[in-house]
Image (cartoon, rainbow, N blue to C red; front, side, top):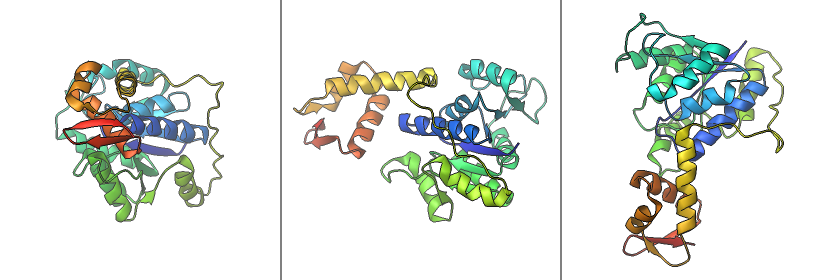
Length: 260
């Protein structure tokens, strides 16, 4: 079976995780296997979305070493229902120099690489560069220029990567290249239960709900909002940035914010 890779930021946004999961589900419905690196964030979402249809996890360390440790359950699910790949000896813990080697395997396994979120000089861009060297197709999801996680993907698009918003954008390129008529993705309807996101994604949803509940038409100090939400400052600020980019909130003098 043909394979497509999905890679991206470890500190992915909630929207990025949602999109990566949706892409993986749609690729699986079209008959493609999804490859990724079993990391946090985008990789996790890609594997979860493709568990039912086929996924390959390429590991930086030994095949018996789970990294990061919080992905142990996903590791076991892929071992049972998908494929785990490593070129390192058994028992070897992953080192920084191992990850670029892993990335070349991810791109080498796939007909194309989809970058969902990537900062400049990130591992995802290393994977994209390997893909180009190996003659693979590169796809990138555009993002706001205000989000550092979008800078890498936006640069790839400027350099010629295929702008990707849905799985159809990728399948349109792969169909003539592979001479295979992939079916249209069967997107889940309202009767299909939602995909079980990671605990990190559930926590992001909790923080978003808390922020939206605390915000009102009257400006509130961001520091006070963080205290009331009882959440990490970075998580609250990420939610506020997403709301601001969506045009739903407005900033006021004194580091205050309110619904627009």
